[in-house]
Structure formats: C-alpha cells, structure tokens
Image (cartoon, rainbow, N blue to C red; front, top):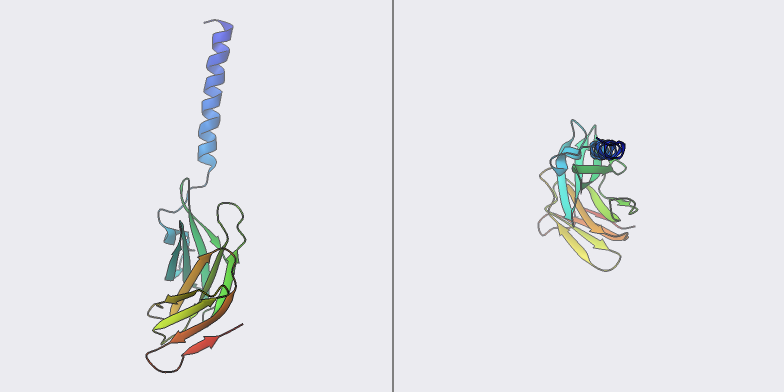
Length: 164
C-alpha cells in the first residue's frame, strides 16, 4: 500500500472514531417524559405544549416543575424552581435558550377543586382539570403574564382565587 493510501485509510479511521465519540458524548435521555423527573418524585399533573411536556411532580414536600423536551437520544428535562406543596398558584417560565423554547407555566395545588381557570394577560383562558389531589398545570409557549387563577368546585363560590 502506498504512503498516500495508508494516510487516507488512517484519516478515514480517525474520522470514524471521532464521529462515534461525538455521538456517544451526547447524554442519553429518558425513554419517556416522566423519566426526566428525579428519583422518588410522583408525577401529579402534566400539560403538552408543542413537542414539550410540562410536568408537575410532588418531591420532598414540594411541587417540582420540569419542562421535558425530546433530544437526539431521548427525553431531557429542565427543572424550574420548586415551590411548597400547598402553593395555590405559581408562575415559572423558561427564557427560550438552547433546545427549549420560551414556555410559561402556571401550576399549584387546590384540594377540592373540580376545575381551575387560568386567565392570561392576552385575554385568553385555559380551563384545566386538576388531578385527584388538586394539583394542576396550564402552560403556553412564549413569555406571557397571568391575569388570574380561579379554582371552582361545583356551583358554589371559588375554592381559591389568585390575582396578581
């Protein structure tokens, strides 16, 4: 084999090794969105926003919100600031950096609520059914303010109401 042919073969082999190493350096993700939650967390509510899943879990006495997104090797997650489990309404958002677009989430826990109404600053409304324990989440793509949250049970007065 000529020196030029050996050099070409060696270059091709090196390129293959570099390509395999690059693929293997991408962190492996979870098989499903819920797999992005920390060990021991209990998924309480979720909301789909495009390709993303906004997950709210109970973990160590707090409500933890994770934005799960599909990557090249499975699902990955971005944790938002946790809040106490008794929080009626919290608002968190991602800034839109990297693979996660800007997303605004409203979440909390209102035991006894049958429906949670979220009013966004642009005038739109979301009606969210809470889980059995009262945990709920509403989310939208973009950075948008929340005008109010109202939790209802039957035809009576609101179980909880929060306005900024």
